[in-house]
Image (tube, rainbow, N blue to C red; front, side, top):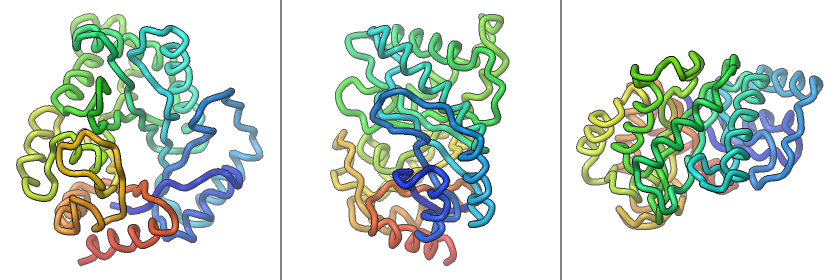
Length: 286
């Protein structure tokens, strides 16, 4: 397993691998464009070439792409719904050009819909996303912290979402590229805030995920400590060992990631993120 963090692209996409190297990253996560919205410009060949050369130069083992913040694949607002579908598809295509391994996304909010309606809406969105897709990058669902009507805080629900895309019945409607929905990006802070206690009930939390999703579906981990208390339903990251999960929780999380060869990405603020990366490396190399 490898350790890294989310790296800014404000100095140019091709500069990100060098920044990642300076911060001690073995792997890195990026946005491929502004996460706030606006037109997603095409990647030019020169930028792609320079980016891939820098990844090789600095020995970055894996690249991960985070989808933009505005995604809502269950929205009843067609502008938001179809815009989200388009953005995910474009991010998968851009990630493939950059040889990134996965794109991870939140799912959005269910609003006034019940779960049956939400699942149906999500299933249709995934069919549209993957229709005709032949890229190498695959998609991960990132679990949420669970505030309000946000989808995906409960791994039982995430399990049902994944199952709805691979159900044999009606499979003729699903493109073969649906396998590009590969699994889960486990965010430690979000899961702690939504009822998975990595500090005091580590094995129990793992068993819940195993039962509902399968541990083999965890393809990457966002390693973030939590400002807020267990089951707070609030998305508040902090540095490793400085929050409510604590070092003892991360000792177990790192051991799990190492055993299963799952990369860990910190999403904490610079410059403290450099210490977070070093801390995780120390726990890994014990």
